[in-house]
Image 1 (spheres, rainbow, N blue to C red):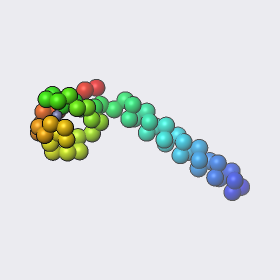
Image 2 (image 1 turned 180 degrees about the vertical axis):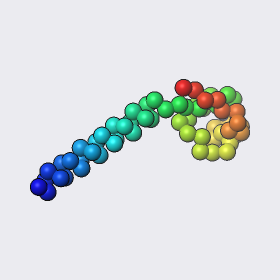
Image 3 (image 1 turned 120 degrees about the horizontal axis):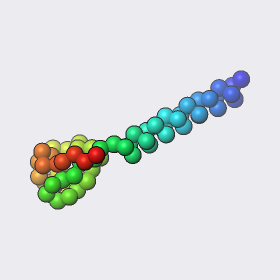
Length: 61
Ligand SMILES: [Zn+2]
């Protein structure tokens, strides 16, 4: 019983990881219109490459 439960847990985890991978692959990304830096998430106020405001980033799907 215990081994079976463990296997089920691993299987569920694998499915979650697969969904996460699919999600990141299909996710939009953002490009700096000044320096061209491409990021998956804008988690900064200014571009870490050229220092321009994050407002200058455009969303690409
Ligand atoms: Zn930039």
